[in-house]
Image 1 (cartoon, rainbow, N blue to C red):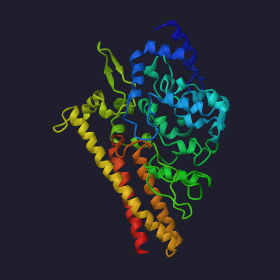
Image 2: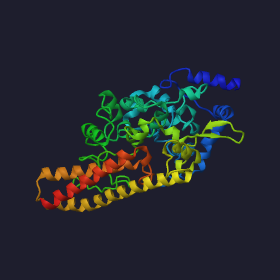
Image 3: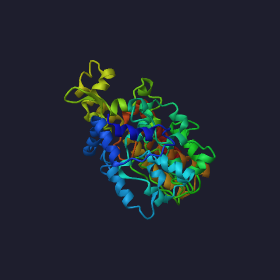
Image 4: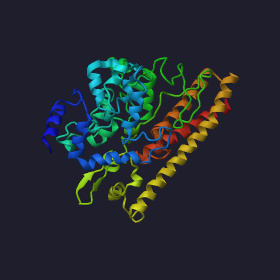
Length: 415
């Protein structure tokens, strides 16, 4: 390990990661490359992955995040960026928060924030490691935003899960001021997980916290749906969506079989590999689908191997079959949402049902859409893709959505 690298990391990482001012530079990246070449180049390998390129972003994977964020920074020199937009993309956010305090959670863009960012900052070593002199022992959630807003959950997560969960969570409606300003949430201790992290608990907290100007809330600016929630909205008729259940990977993981077995994100998405000389290292290409990684499938086989699942090919089929089943259930919810909307619209316009019944029907419709989005994952995903995060709960929430919509249809047809 060269002396220059040791001097740099000593100054950067001896302090706690929440308060350390991170100043990554090209030279420091070069040092990381020299000391941890296998891990370093496996990150760059993710730039060519097409596993997660299902939406218009086409390439917002970990490996090429710096390129895409560089475009965002270049296009925001005047107005600036909303600090919370990158509060789950770079540990440099910690330095910005240290300088500007809670006002970064007002959801307002500023060129001052933009000026503190460089492309190399995004998804750098400091995002996941507190101490680059001892990276393996210092893995964890380094970005402070989830610690501020999600302590109830993050205190329960092992490091190998928290390190991914710091970005893959559903804290955004609070931290980026979609339903309430993040500054107010912190001041009044309105934490998203105060009732739990299942959909019903998140919905309850959302309804209590949302301001009239909150996004996708009954009396507010109401957006049309994403493919994830699928549901339609109508502001005049009061048909709405509830904040959103998007990107709830950490929340869905809790209580599942993999959590109970202490199988974390990194175990499957960042498997151990060997170079051509037999040297072991952990892959840092976490953008790659586990279904396209032999090492990931072999890791899964350590538990799933049986009379029917005997090899990597069988394991891939096992996962794809599970994804297919969940995708079919997702499709069933989408179809029921399509069936329910015109019934709800007609009933509201007819004004024959009581306000109480119509309000319950609106709520049922919005909750079903939330359940669907919660299971779906991020909006660039494919229905059923994330079934392995929690197969039992994923099926459970989609079943709840279907049942809720069936009850709503019956309510609207018979009253």
